[in-house]
Image (cartoon, rainbow, N blue to C red; front, top):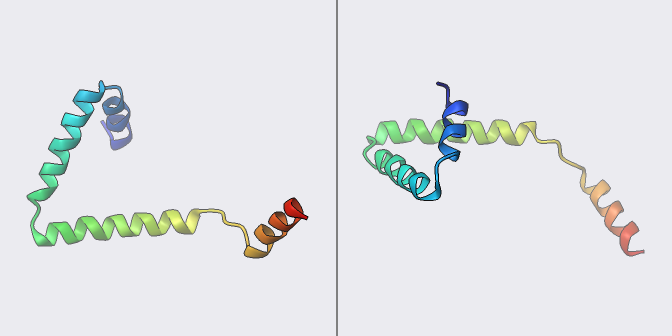
Length: 72
């Protein structure tokens, strides 16, 4: 089972079981070594950076033009 499949199955749990699972997962992170913790955060930072790079943004000029046209 891959991570996506696991997430789908976990979200099917009732709220109390999801909360228990979340608590156990968070507790498991508290026992990481400093090196493991750095690796986890580096991976998360890389994932967030990739998500940011992949996001389609709008230029400030476009946003301001739309705002001005709505309030003109």
